[in-house]
Length: 102
Image (cartoon, rainbow, N blue to C red; front, side, top):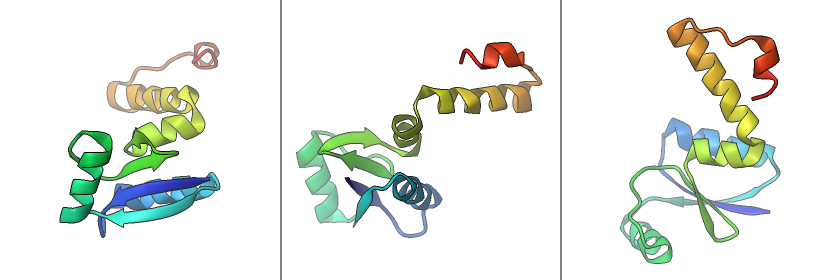
């Protein structure tokens, strides 16, 4: 499978999304953001490129890292992140039996 990653040099999230895609057996075509690439993106997806990375799989714009991870791992992964955030930031502890439902 092939993914296109619109990215920039030295951007941590760009590197992370490429690793995530590689770990899930995607061949990556990287497009470094420049004037012509911005125009190409806008013409293809009828929107401006507002942040990087942006991932495209099968000509469908997936989004940034969080959207790509959600697609790769499903909602359960995102829910685990929220559980960790709630516990770390707010001291809120969700009982284990309820975590399994998420």
